[in-house]
Each structure stands twice: as C-alpha cells, then as structure tokens.
Image (cartoon, rainbow, N blue to C red; front, side, top):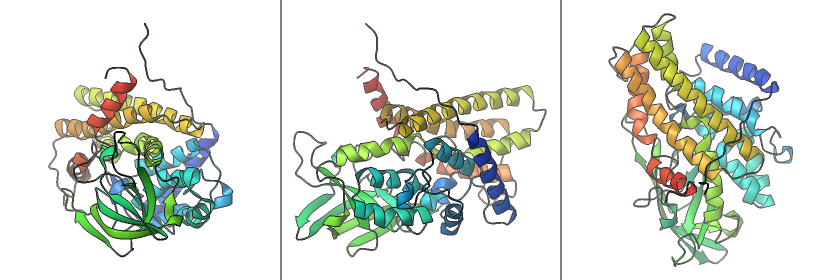
Length: 385
C-alpha cells in the first residue's frame, strides 16, 4: 500500500525574468547609493516606508499579477517572485505594501465584489492604500477555527467586537481583513466564520503596541468594540470565511520572505569570510547555500502552482516550517563561526546584523502560523495523524 506524499512540480524561471532581475537590482543599487535605505534583517516586517513602496509602484512592481482592468500589470507569479526575492536579498524596507501585495490583492480578486475590486485594487497597485490582516487572537494563536471575535447583524451591516493580536503594522495601515465568527459555534468549528474589510480609523477601534525584543513597534493588539462594517465591506460570502482564509495561507506561507529574513546577515558572513575561508567556515557556508537553494526551489514550485490556479496549502506549510528554521540556523552559524559582539549600536556591520537577526528570531516561527501547527498540517497530508 503506497503512502500519501507531497508533490512539488519543479519550476524554472523564464529567461525573460533575468532582464527584470537586472532592472530591479539597478533600482536597488541606486536607492542605496542615494541613502534611501540601509539593508536590515527582517525588513519585510519592520521596514515600513510608504515612499519606497510608491517608488516601486512607479516602476510597475506592485500588483504585478493583478489584471490591467484593476490597475495591475498582468504579469506572472514567477515574475513577481523575481522582484520579491531581490527586494528581500537587498534588505529593502517593503513592509508598507507587503501584506496587500502578497495576499490582500489576490483575495480581493478572487472573492471581492466588483465595487471592492474597483475601489481597492488600483489604490493597492499605486501604493496609495496599505493593508494589515486580523487573524490571530489572544488564546487562539494559529488555531484560526477558535476565533472569538463576533460579527453581529445590525441594520445595514455588521457590528464587530473582539480582539486581534500580532497584527503587523495595524498602527500604520489603512484597512485590514478580519476573520470573525458570524454564527454561534457549533459542532463544525469551521462553519459560521466570515471575513470583513475594516477601516482601521473606524470609531470603536483601539490599537495597542506589542513591542519586539529590539523595542521596535511592528506588532499590535487591535481591540474592536461594536465597530460598524457596512454590507459593502463583507469579503466573499457570509459563512465561508474558513474556506476563504485558508486559501490565503499559501500566499502567506510560501514566499521567499519565509527563508530570507536573515539573508543580509548571510551575505555579510560571505564578505567577512572572504575568498579563502578556513575549512570549517567553507563547509558551513556550503551547507547553508545548499539548504537555501533547496528552499528556493520549493518556494518557486509553490509560486508556479499558484500561477496555475492550484491551492498548494500543504507544500506552503512545509516551506514555511523549513524556511523559518533555516533563518535561525543562519545566525546560529554566524555566532559560532565569527568572533562577534552583537549589538544594535555596533559599528561593525556583522555585529549589527547578528543582533537584528537574534532579536527578531522569536517571530520567525510564530507569524503565519506556528511551526508546530504547520507540522500537524504536513503530518495529516502524509497520513501520519
């Protein structure tokens, strides 16, 4: 009897993507030369720079896969992949547009009304509007079926009450997608869930910072007290929230940001090691490079599957689990190989990047679903539970 498995169809980047890569690298080189940004670890979460995002938009690098009728550029998922991995490799400040470009846009395209698409998508493509996502809650974590935020039917719409936690950049974003329980909890925990598009400046919303170990403010607790949401801002169908939100997770979990958060540190390790590293360092760099390349191939396969209209949820979970562990492995190797004094005020670049990586690392395996939950997803697909 054969065992179930996870199949990842190999994917290759078309040659045309290399010309696009050259353009993106030239842009990033000019930005750095002009002092527009300093490469940092985990800058896709912490580097919130709306002006930088709008400069990307001016080059056509936001909303790349969205249809032209909604202001997008009609390009492929693999072309978008090239742009995102170059931005991550450069440690660029992309947090402002990241969530919207990665998953909000595709979700709106798939489940939104024509009015919602016409209203939001052109603004997303131009960098005029930024999004956050409200999934996790206190006590719920990665178990999205246990959310307790309530949506109560009222005249003309819904009243939303509850708390969302770990909502990245909610204090800076304009709107966020919120998963709520719109019907009482029954035997099927996945039933009775719905998604709403909420203006973060609405009356009844309170946003509290949840600082990370560096003291930086990226995460938030968002408290909603009977926040009114009109019927025109229901996403998809009432009661279909579980199906909708799980379709987002392949976008959220499989991208190169799940294994490139510490890539600037890896690059600095290569620079410090030089052309003739000692044997121990050379072996460690080779192992890291091989692991990185394997993760990239897996992530590319998921991107190609999304392009084909598939829902590679399990493969995405695997990429996220292995990728976030790799991110921590990078700084552990650096710590053992190089005589470092990690500090956020360090002058030496490798000391600074190591401090950033270590202090951001608790979030690597939490955001987008904890690795423990993701291993359960993979185990079920393999028939192990």
